[in-house]
Amino acid sequence: MPQFDVSGSTISHHLKVLRGAGLVDCRGTWVYYWPVPDRIQWLSTLLAVPTSSTLSS
Image (tube, rainbow, N blue to C red; front, side, top):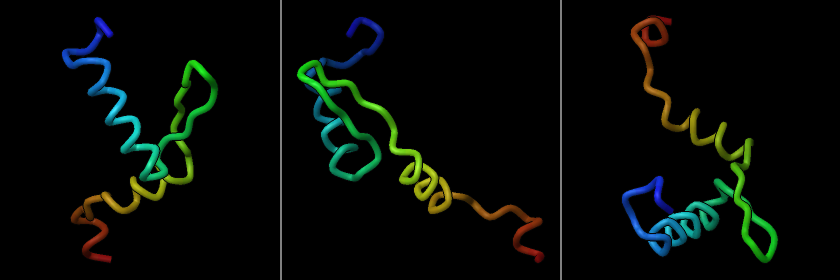
């Protein structure tokens, strides 16, 4: 993983955590990961910070 400043095992651990949270899914012997769109949208909504225009509504 030359693109990242962490070890492959660290990346693997974090992908396992994201998979456990339902944010990514995977398949195959050579594991390929992808985001789960519904869960990413849910997380985006959960983390959205109200703006001044939404507070005045």
